[in-house]
Image (cartoon, rainbow, N blue to C red; front, top):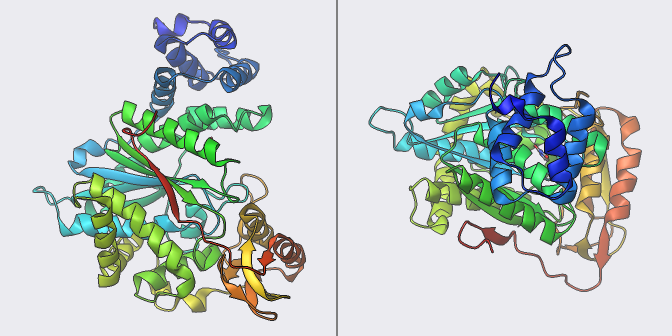
Length: 464
Ligand code: URA
């Protein structure tokens, strides 16, 4: 028995309940007890884990405690030893949005930049070991979108992921039971104990999984606005600061961008339709409704290229990113990643023809004016109800459900003009989402100023 295991869970709970700072040994012992317990080895009970979570929810964690909790969770399972590749490993994480498909563009953009400048060992100069999640609540999931590509395998082991990185400069994989098992156990209990919203627990949950990828740098896209996971700007900013602090504490350069999620990003929200939109962009077809998506993807890629040393400033990085998109290099990298992970790339020759919803309905404007506001979370729930998201973990999602946006906030609209097209595989699923979308749209007679896409950038240098 190690010294750490002799710390009893009840003492850890009492200390946090009474507002004391936990020692590193206490935190590590608690997490170890969680992952090492078995039906016959009751190192810590569910009731004790729940009490610990509530104590953290109410008392919070100081930066050292948060860094230690995150590291203990990160090393609770398998971690990717990407150091062996001797390349600059970097990733992007978004706190989740509606129509947020930037990952599908960013991974091939950065891969293309890395492939263009390989290391002396012949490995791409930058690699993106991207572990993505599934749709959750009103937000979409990159994994669900990728799995609409026939044959594409997201269930790769870390050694297999390393092979794809060496070959392609990016790998797009899903969470496995052996990556950060502590988070799986904690998250399930948070869901039942009213402790999901703790910024400390969210930080440990997100950052432990990202850091398990073995990153040199991480760019975070923390959403603010009506479609954001956090309810206020201040709470999103606090979360961003905690995540930057925690990443930097584990020697991963971390930057967070607070970005607007007041309306769906880009043209489509759903699963296959989002892949289609990104393929169009990578093939050089820029639909006007995709402008915000392209801009945000270039800004985030720009930061990544800057942190990786491929651009002097993030702005120069954003220009480089757009050049990579326009030159077709990102599309070439995309085809390589998809093919290497078993996907059928012929579907990209005519992506529109693979969009096969059984039911379609167009929601039209009933008055003239300017599109002033919408509850973006409500739009996300409408997408989920069309079949694109899931009501509970494990539910199947529809490849072809979703919405197409025809207007952006601030646009002038006239009666009869299409605002959204709804897609579903079941016509019975159209009525409720149509009503939800209709109710949430606000039209104003005067021009409403647009909010900038990037509201604030948080780095280690500007955290108070
Ligand atoms: N996403 C996560 O992975 N964890 C959280 O706690 C919240 C969002």
